[in-house]
Length: 257
Image 1 (cartoon, rainbow, N blue to C red):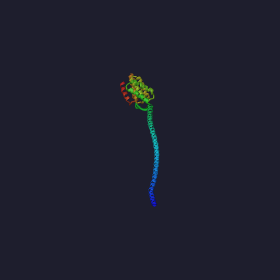
Image 2 (cartoon, one colour):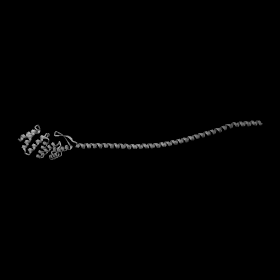
Image 3 (cartoon, rainbow, N blue to C red):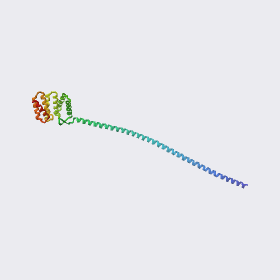
Image 4 (cartoon, rainbow, N blue to C red):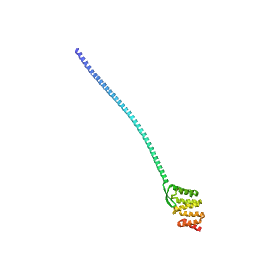
Protein backbone atom coordinates (compact mmCIF):
# COMPACT_ATOMS: atom_id res chain seq x y z
CA UNK A 1 0.00 0.00 0.00
CA UNK A 2 2.75 2.29 0.89
CA UNK A 3 4.58 1.17 -2.20
CA UNK A 4 1.51 2.02 -4.29
CA UNK A 5 1.22 5.47 -2.80
CA UNK A 6 4.84 6.16 -3.42
CA UNK A 7 4.42 5.12 -7.03
CA UNK A 8 1.34 7.32 -7.43
CA UNK A 9 3.12 10.25 -5.91
CA UNK A 10 6.10 9.76 -8.18
CA UNK A 11 3.80 9.64 -11.17
CA UNK A 12 2.01 12.80 -10.07
CA UNK A 13 5.29 14.57 -9.64
CA UNK A 14 6.40 13.41 -13.02
CA UNK A 15 3.24 14.73 -14.61
CA UNK A 16 3.57 17.98 -12.76
CA UNK A 17 7.08 18.32 -13.93
CA UNK A 18 5.92 17.83 -17.46
CA UNK A 19 3.49 20.76 -17.20
CA UNK A 20 5.80 22.98 -15.11
CA UNK A 21 8.71 23.03 -17.57
CA UNK A 22 6.76 24.60 -20.52
CA UNK A 23 5.19 27.19 -18.26
CA UNK A 24 8.56 28.29 -17.10
CA UNK A 25 9.84 28.44 -20.65
CA UNK A 26 6.80 30.46 -21.79
CA UNK A 27 7.36 32.91 -18.99
CA UNK A 28 10.95 33.35 -20.04
CA UNK A 29 9.97 33.92 -23.68
CA UNK A 30 7.44 36.67 -22.72
CA UNK A 31 10.13 38.61 -20.86
CA UNK A 32 12.47 38.44 -23.84
CA UNK A 33 9.73 39.64 -26.15
CA UNK A 34 8.85 42.50 -23.85
CA UNK A 35 12.48 43.51 -23.65
CA UNK A 36 12.79 43.28 -27.40
CA UNK A 37 9.65 45.36 -27.82
CA UNK A 38 10.96 47.90 -25.34
CA UNK A 39 14.28 48.03 -27.12
CA UNK A 40 12.50 48.40 -30.41
CA UNK A 41 10.32 51.15 -29.00
CA UNK A 42 13.39 52.92 -27.64
CA UNK A 43 15.06 52.61 -31.02
CA UNK A 44 11.93 53.89 -32.76
CA UNK A 45 11.62 56.74 -30.25
CA UNK A 46 15.27 57.55 -30.70
CA UNK A 47 14.88 57.43 -34.48
CA UNK A 48 11.82 59.64 -34.17
CA UNK A 49 13.77 62.08 -32.01
CA UNK A 50 16.69 61.92 -34.40
CA UNK A 51 14.31 62.42 -37.35
CA UNK A 52 12.58 65.30 -35.55
CA UNK A 53 15.96 66.84 -34.79
CA UNK A 54 17.06 66.39 -38.39
CA UNK A 55 13.74 67.70 -39.65
CA UNK A 56 14.01 70.72 -37.38
CA UNK A 57 17.55 71.26 -38.57
CA UNK A 58 16.40 70.90 -42.17
CA UNK A 59 13.54 73.31 -41.54
CA UNK A 60 15.94 75.74 -39.93
CA UNK A 61 18.33 75.34 -42.83
CA UNK A 62 15.44 75.74 -45.27
CA UNK A 63 14.27 78.90 -43.50
CA UNK A 64 17.81 80.22 -43.48
CA UNK A 65 18.11 79.35 -47.15
CA UNK A 66 14.82 81.12 -47.89
CA UNK A 67 16.05 84.17 -46.03
CA UNK A 68 19.30 84.02 -47.95
CA UNK A 69 17.39 83.66 -51.21
CA UNK A 70 15.16 86.58 -50.27
CA UNK A 71 18.22 88.64 -49.40
CA UNK A 72 19.85 87.61 -52.67
CA UNK A 73 16.69 88.44 -54.58
CA UNK A 74 16.63 91.81 -52.86
CA UNK A 75 20.22 92.38 -53.82
CA UNK A 76 19.45 91.32 -57.39
CA UNK A 77 16.47 93.68 -57.49
CA UNK A 78 18.68 96.42 -56.09
CA UNK A 79 21.32 95.72 -58.70
CA UNK A 80 18.65 95.76 -61.40
CA UNK A 81 17.48 99.11 -60.11
CA UNK A 82 21.04 100.42 -60.07
CA UNK A 83 21.60 99.10 -63.59
CA UNK A 84 18.39 100.76 -64.76
CA UNK A 85 19.54 104.02 -63.21
CA UNK A 86 22.95 103.63 -64.81
CA UNK A 87 21.33 102.91 -68.18
CA UNK A 88 19.15 105.95 -67.78
CA UNK A 89 22.14 108.04 -66.76
CA UNK A 90 24.14 106.65 -69.67
CA UNK A 91 21.32 107.41 -72.11
CA UNK A 92 21.06 110.92 -70.70
CA UNK A 93 24.81 111.36 -70.99
CA UNK A 94 24.64 110.11 -74.57
CA UNK A 95 21.88 112.61 -75.35
CA UNK A 96 23.78 115.39 -73.60
CA UNK A 97 26.93 114.49 -75.52
CA UNK A 98 25.00 114.42 -78.79
CA UNK A 99 23.44 117.80 -77.99
CA UNK A 100 26.84 119.20 -77.03
CA UNK A 101 28.41 117.90 -80.23
CA UNK A 102 25.56 119.43 -82.25
CA UNK A 103 26.01 122.72 -80.43
CA UNK A 104 29.73 122.60 -81.15
CA UNK A 105 29.06 121.87 -84.83
CA UNK A 106 26.52 124.67 -84.98
CA UNK A 107 28.92 127.03 -83.24
CA UNK A 108 31.75 126.03 -85.57
CA UNK A 109 29.47 126.50 -88.57
CA UNK A 110 28.35 129.86 -87.22
CA UNK A 111 31.95 130.93 -86.72
CA UNK A 112 32.83 129.75 -90.23
CA UNK A 113 29.85 131.62 -91.65
CA UNK A 114 30.87 134.75 -89.78
CA UNK A 115 34.46 134.42 -90.90
CA UNK A 116 33.36 133.91 -94.47
CA UNK A 117 31.50 137.19 -94.24
CA UNK A 118 34.83 138.88 -93.67
CA UNK A 119 37.11 136.72 -95.80
CA UNK A 120 38.05 138.21 -99.18
CA UNK A 121 36.38 136.62 -102.19
CA UNK A 122 37.37 136.40 -105.83
CA UNK A 123 35.03 138.38 -108.09
CA UNK A 124 34.82 139.16 -111.78
CA UNK A 125 33.29 142.47 -112.81
CA UNK A 126 33.42 143.96 -116.32
CA UNK A 127 35.90 141.27 -117.34
CA UNK A 128 38.35 142.01 -114.54
CA UNK A 129 39.24 139.59 -111.72
CA UNK A 130 40.14 140.89 -108.29
CA UNK A 131 39.76 140.21 -104.59
CA UNK A 132 37.10 142.02 -102.60
CA UNK A 133 35.69 141.95 -99.11
CA UNK A 134 32.19 140.50 -98.82
CA UNK A 135 30.94 143.90 -97.67
CA UNK A 136 32.25 145.54 -100.87
CA UNK A 137 30.58 142.89 -102.98
CA UNK A 138 27.31 143.25 -101.12
CA UNK A 139 27.24 147.07 -101.36
CA UNK A 140 28.20 147.13 -105.04
CA UNK A 141 25.59 144.54 -106.00
CA UNK A 142 22.96 146.44 -104.00
CA UNK A 143 23.80 149.66 -105.88
CA UNK A 144 23.63 147.83 -109.21
CA UNK A 145 20.26 146.35 -108.32
CA UNK A 146 18.97 149.85 -107.59
CA UNK A 147 20.28 151.12 -110.94
CA UNK A 148 18.67 148.23 -112.84
CA UNK A 149 15.32 149.04 -111.21
CA UNK A 150 15.55 152.46 -112.84
CA UNK A 151 15.78 154.32 -109.52
CA UNK A 152 18.63 156.55 -110.75
CA UNK A 153 18.44 159.00 -107.85
CA UNK A 154 18.91 156.25 -105.27
CA UNK A 155 21.51 154.56 -107.49
CA UNK A 156 23.51 157.81 -107.73
CA UNK A 157 23.56 158.07 -103.95
CA UNK A 158 24.49 154.40 -103.53
CA UNK A 159 27.43 154.56 -105.97
CA UNK A 160 28.61 157.89 -104.55
CA UNK A 161 28.66 156.33 -101.06
CA UNK A 162 30.48 153.30 -102.42
CA UNK A 163 33.41 155.19 -103.99
CA UNK A 164 33.83 157.18 -100.77
CA UNK A 165 33.65 154.11 -98.54
CA UNK A 166 35.95 151.95 -100.65
CA UNK A 167 38.53 154.25 -102.28
CA UNK A 168 40.91 151.36 -103.08
CA UNK A 169 38.33 148.79 -104.10
CA UNK A 170 38.65 146.77 -107.28
CA UNK A 171 35.04 147.74 -107.88
CA UNK A 172 35.92 151.46 -107.96
CA UNK A 173 36.33 151.90 -111.77
CA UNK A 174 33.02 150.12 -112.43
CA UNK A 175 31.37 152.08 -109.59
CA UNK A 176 32.59 155.37 -111.15
CA UNK A 177 31.21 154.31 -114.53
CA UNK A 178 27.75 153.51 -113.19
CA UNK A 179 27.78 156.58 -110.97
CA UNK A 180 28.41 158.68 -114.09
CA UNK A 181 25.55 156.91 -115.89
CA UNK A 182 23.19 157.53 -112.97
CA UNK A 183 24.18 161.21 -112.99
CA UNK A 184 23.62 161.36 -116.75
CA UNK A 185 20.14 159.88 -116.25
CA UNK A 186 19.55 162.56 -113.58
CA UNK A 187 20.86 165.24 -115.97
CA UNK A 188 23.84 165.98 -113.77
CA UNK A 189 26.11 166.16 -116.84
CA UNK A 190 29.03 167.98 -115.25
CA UNK A 191 29.09 165.57 -112.33
CA UNK A 192 28.94 162.65 -114.77
CA UNK A 193 31.88 164.02 -116.81
CA UNK A 194 33.95 164.30 -113.62
CA UNK A 195 33.37 160.67 -112.63
CA UNK A 196 33.94 159.33 -116.16
CA UNK A 197 37.27 161.14 -116.25
CA UNK A 198 38.12 159.81 -112.81
CA UNK A 199 37.58 156.32 -114.19
CA UNK A 200 39.87 157.02 -117.17
CA UNK A 201 42.54 158.44 -114.90
CA UNK A 202 42.47 155.48 -112.53
CA UNK A 203 42.09 152.68 -115.10
CA UNK A 204 42.60 153.77 -118.72
CA UNK A 205 42.74 150.12 -119.78
CA UNK A 206 39.46 149.24 -118.10
CA UNK A 207 36.93 147.46 -120.38
CA UNK A 208 34.47 150.31 -119.67
CA UNK A 209 36.98 153.03 -120.57
CA UNK A 210 35.85 153.46 -124.25
CA UNK A 211 32.21 153.74 -123.10
CA UNK A 212 33.26 156.28 -120.49
CA UNK A 213 34.87 158.46 -123.20
CA UNK A 214 31.74 158.18 -125.37
CA UNK A 215 29.59 159.09 -122.35
CA UNK A 216 31.73 162.22 -121.77
CA UNK A 217 31.02 163.25 -125.34
CA UNK A 218 27.30 162.65 -124.82
CA UNK A 219 27.36 164.85 -121.72
CA UNK A 220 29.16 167.58 -123.68
CA UNK A 221 26.53 167.42 -126.40
CA UNK A 222 23.81 167.78 -123.77
CA UNK A 223 25.71 170.80 -122.43
CA UNK A 224 25.79 172.24 -126.00
CA UNK A 225 29.60 171.89 -126.09
CA UNK A 226 29.79 170.40 -129.57
CA UNK A 227 33.41 171.43 -130.06
CA UNK A 228 34.42 169.70 -126.89
CA UNK A 229 32.34 166.66 -127.89
CA UNK A 230 34.18 166.46 -131.26
CA UNK A 231 37.58 166.55 -129.53
CA UNK A 232 36.45 163.84 -127.12
CA UNK A 233 35.16 161.67 -129.95
CA UNK A 234 38.42 162.11 -131.88
CA UNK A 235 40.36 161.07 -128.79
CA UNK A 236 38.12 158.03 -128.41
CA UNK A 237 38.76 156.87 -131.99
CA UNK A 238 42.52 157.35 -131.57
CA UNK A 239 42.78 155.72 -128.11
CA UNK A 240 40.41 152.79 -128.66
CA UNK A 241 40.11 152.33 -132.42
CA UNK A 242 38.87 148.74 -132.30
CA UNK A 243 36.14 149.28 -129.74
CA UNK A 244 32.40 149.41 -130.38
CA UNK A 245 32.43 152.85 -128.74
CA UNK A 246 34.89 154.03 -131.44
CA UNK A 247 32.44 152.91 -134.16
CA UNK A 248 29.66 154.91 -132.48
CA UNK A 249 32.04 157.85 -132.13
CA UNK A 250 32.75 157.91 -135.89
CA UNK A 251 29.03 158.02 -136.65
CA UNK A 252 28.49 160.91 -134.24
CA UNK A 253 31.49 162.79 -135.59
CA UNK A 254 29.95 162.56 -139.04
CA UNK A 255 26.76 164.09 -137.74
CA UNK A 256 28.52 166.84 -135.77
CA UNK A 257 30.58 167.96 -138.76
